[in-house]
Image (tube, rainbow, N blue to C red; front, side):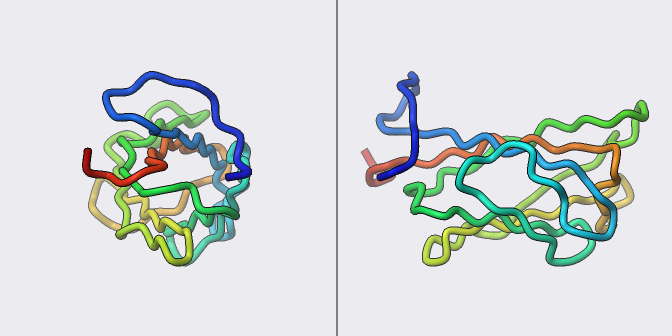
Length: 125
């Protein structure tokens, strides 16, 4: 694989971490600040697609993303979930939800940081 990866320790072998950081823009595609080899597009209200240029391996998942905003409490009680990873097209769709359970845009002064885990060998050990 042509992707840069660096040695790390994990409970499973051959795990890679992809760090992705996006800044909101309201009702348009967010700005990708971090995420080598990944593009981000907006599919709808608070619905974003990450697409990898190369196969990153077998998708393992991601923890709740880091949330940051210039206004205190702007992202309080929001959640993010995803649809199943599409391995054939190397993409992951995520959805941002408000505390009331409605789809919500990521505003201009708000950021989400994802740590997405992949395994470069079979998932079963």
